[in-house]
Image 1 (cartoon, one colour):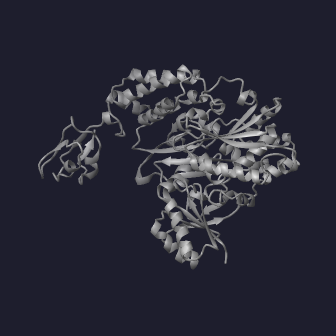
Image 2 (cartoon, rainbow, N blue to C red; image 1 turned 90 degrees about the vertical axis):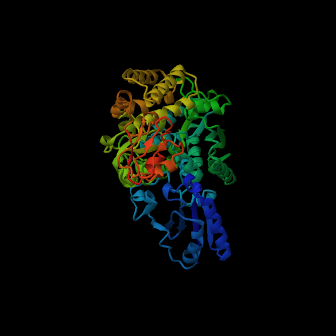
Length: 596
């Protein structure tokens, strides 16, 4: 009998939908039916289809079941695991393991067909707790090739030739960065993986650490060999307990297999690796603040130069790359730079992982070739805007990025194009908005996050962003004027020019991009005292029109008792007690309650 594997998604959305209960029920039923000798059950990280959870994939026949309930498990066991019949009512689509570039292809869904999975190549396919499954997928072949057949300069040249740029947001050429560190002479050098993923809605790095931790270990051994570092650290935030557990387990396994430690593969090269936990400060995603945190100091950015490649951790040459950047390294070395650069654009090779969310039908984790157009991502992979609403904007780059409009949908996604439009790639957050989003409120939301997360070291960021937030709050309350918009713009450019670190310098981007692309909404807030999207509560007024049939549903559902009227007569809303929750409008059968 062919051995089957039942893989349960353990991504955040699936966990919220009780995927752990699904896994436990599978284990229970498999034991009940006496199938444990031929069937194994394990969890993996996010499969990508976050809105279809809980998700389960059964291998080797590659069947995906979505939106499962605990009571569905018994039917899958009886029909599929015992009789070999797919339960069609629960089957999302069939998936087929194909070539390395399209490991999982959903035949009826554009969600996977349009993707190229390289960083996510093992997610959903291997047991992340078993090093042997990683090795079976060419794991540690890259580091073996590097240590036994290549010099450190060969490794750096191959990475440089691949065109790989940092996936953490800055987009600096990885090979060039490594070359700087190699040229700096020192008795000790360090290598750090930045897994302090702090952008709202971003979970790309967490998915890799949870689903493919050995790829990061292998990459760091290669990087250490290339620059001459013998000690590495993986800096991961404490809010990722599963990622911490799995990377620590993987490090332990790597030591047991003598892939870490002394004289790896008999090459004479030694490399040690351990984790360091961060407390969840957004600023520690900035490399010099991260270094300070590892050293036991408060996580605050430092002046540059000197750059970490010259003087970083404990004043020694240090290279810092993020999780996604490292995940590409083993494949570049094993398969070659030309293979890696075969997709993408001339200035941005390879793929990019995005966390696609917001007002979109297919939310989740996606990986696309560089140069893919925004329209392709939103309307093909993402499935378009739900409920027939109109697309309004897409925010890329999180709090450091900007909002792009419909006229930008045919823009190829790469570092330079997004920066030119006032946004940026960032670590990979992509939030879609529809006609019901207020862009002034969106700018306020991101700036509120920045103010909360500012380390406070430099005045422009500490005080300037706070003043910007106060102006935005004033505008959303309907108390602003045209002069406030001018002040907001002036402050934004001053902060960009004078903040100490990249996070402070890019903090005004959401405001500047919304001012550029949606200035009419700012004007409506300060001149007309209206919020066109009906989001800013201070500017909303609810009215009951003559279409009211006097059914009384609105008054029964009003939590503030703000609606008066007799049955079969037009009701009225007391504007002094109305809390503007919108409950009345939602229950009105004749849509007689409107905002103005």
